[in-house]
Image (cartoon, rainbow, N blue to C red; front, side):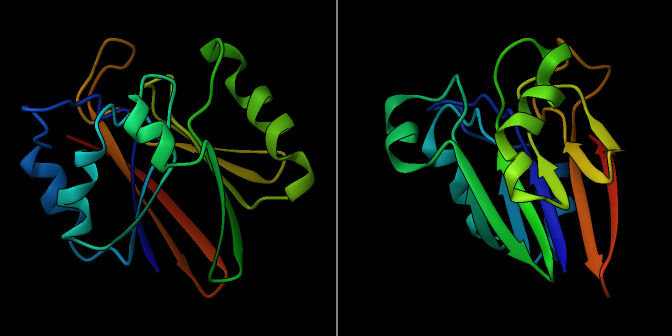
Length: 162
């Protein structure tokens, strides 16, 4: 299973255009996960043309997004438990916040956003994966998204620079 992961698109109408390189990079994904801060719900439309989409809301999302999406999601894919939440609070505390949010779920993967800084790291046996932002480099050296592949119980994750 190939999962495309995006976060922190921060796009609103009339400029809800995702980078073309992102759209091409997500082709062939079985699922796309958006980890919040869409800002406008229409950001999901071009992603839905590529694959099935799961998304959570973030702290910068408008009322329409927050009424249509939950703040957390737990997905079971290919025998792996994936917990998704945008995140909140200070970026340096984000992993601890997410551990507290999902500790009882015993996740294999925690997908998040908020910091705009890519992260692909195992901590205490759990993959903490932040794809970075596809549109913003304020807190990161480059724009990015992620790809996670689950095959025969093995997880392979990569950050893709835009």
